[in-house]
Length: 138
Image (tube, rainbow, N blue to C red; front, top):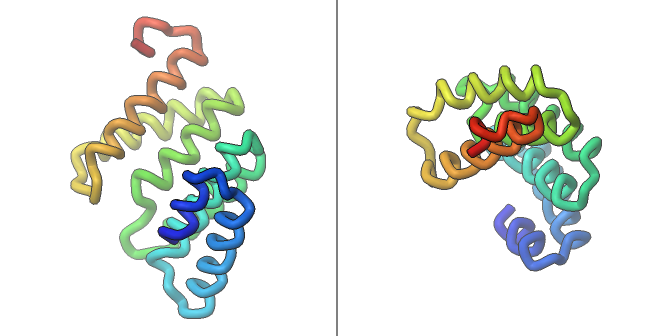
């Protein structure tokens, strides 16, 4: 996973996609459901960065589905990715519902919580800007 993230951040997208595909195959083979939703979500992130919003949403929706099958449910980071997809596709009602859920969960402790808070603020601003509410976006 971390090799894939590093390669994606370095612009080595094809290699990153291969890394994530390999890691997903290993997670499925080993029944490692903890990482499977996260890896699938990372695939969504890479596709969103490429501008392939449909593919990003497919991966993010799959990541949410996989996470819901787990005992602990979807992590905010996985839901946030799907929210960003909805905002960029103009699906304002779905984005609003996810944002409300994410803001309610904001108090949950998470690894690198400051990064999650920053991403939530950015997604919220993008959502409200897309809806034409500049005051709330600010």
